[in-house]
Length: 151
Figure (cartoon, rainbow, N blue to C red):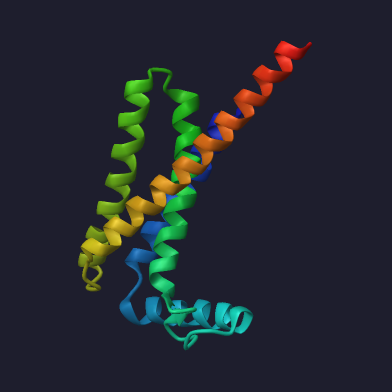
């Protein structure tokens, strides 16, 4: 299977994971957050382990991390499908905003409420994921060009 199709599958799985967590009841979501918090608190030893690790909210770290992964995969996926740089940049930006807004909208319907702060954390995580991939691609391109000129 071609690489771009694998990227599309991974992208879809990450979106399903994000939105799937938003569908969960507040009780189940809290239970999962506590379990993850306790796991990381056992490693890092700080925070109360129930809701924070090192003073950072487990939920906020999860939002940032899952959207950073989504941003990284989305930037690679869009790079494979879209060759026009303007459409690529617009597509990347709109995709991240759309997934973040839908995530918070789903939480309204699962009676958990939504948070503008979470949207900002999601979009920032998404942008960081995109930025990391852009820096890696740029470094690889420069290295490739440098090696081509030395041969």
